Image (tube, rainbow, N blue to C red; front, side, top):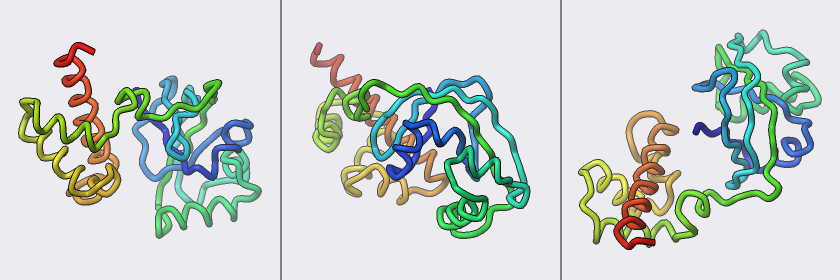
Length: 182
């Protein structure tokens, strides 16, 4: 399942329904997909993608700003410039309907059974037969101390690298669970 991630400062706007869209420089989502919504390090619900529209940055409207939870188009553009460091030529306007969970979930609980990720990586490196790529990613994670820092140390897309590291950790968790029969 795909994920849609937000900074923690948007949690109340998301849960209240004030934020019904997001503007992104890159997009791998399609209309009709169901995604897990993360906010401030927690999984807060699932969303159905209602539409994905590619626009020139200058085409963004007051309506786009309001759906994204901003008071004005100027406020939205300032936030986008702050996030991206420069004005993107094109953006994607992603509209969604959020279905909040009754209680936020920690990704570690869902994907790693509440295991400490550093201990999980160490145990996997010691006990499992891993592919070279998996071993490299787990070692890099331990060296960096976080998924985010490890992803930044790799060449290529930060988002793809972060997902590669997460998947290596998830695979290690599943293999360890199978090995121990938990």
